[in-house]
Length: 319
Image (cartoon, rainbow, N blue to C red):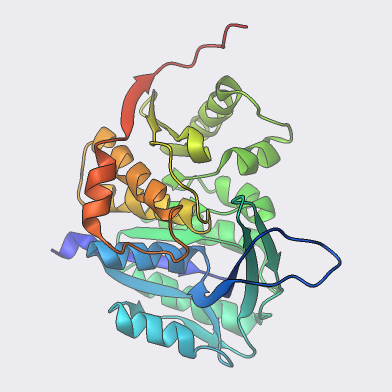
């Protein structure tokens, strides 16, 4: 079905090295019990999940030419169309240390530095894909050599062409990107607090901030809250999902999996409640595994029945 076409943009992809361990002792030798190395970056994680679901996925962004083999292997394996712009150097390696308690320590290394020529080549690729695609996911951090303002310009141009842009980033990239009114944003509570410049500790505070963002023209504000589920504001209404309690193995890629679920619902034109229930089930399943992706659809279907989705109003908590 041609409507299942989607482009994911990963401007700063990474090879994710994940290591499982008992407890991290800083300043001393730590033994890793198991590890793996996977092509990652937020947009690539979204692409993996969408490919598993059956979407026709095209990936683009900047890819270092020195260590691209694992990425190429993934794209081939999952029948993902590769439109990455090759740049000099190696894509970064991110080390994720997952302790038995579920705590994750991220060591994110700098990646490639892109030139103005690279940026222009990517821009040409992006807008040629916009001729044939209506839904874009732009997710993750920016490489050195690229400004948040450039990112804002791309989102604005796609928005003006009537494209649906799902946007998930943080820090300066998030702040600038939000000004371009993407169709859907998915900050977590921490990223939203950072953007707001204050700790948003209550659901009421998160919802107030979400509504303020919606007033700027963002049609869908999705706030992920880990074990507390997801809040989604659209058309003046909030809905909320609550996942069942899961045995957490790793939270790596859970947010990206949620974004993929939201995209899948939109591509299939599902009602909001169905989309949120499905996306929440996908994300809940993601925390029970180390790798990003769907190993068994039956597990998702079983979880879907355990996710509650309801309409809520923004009322200040009594207390």
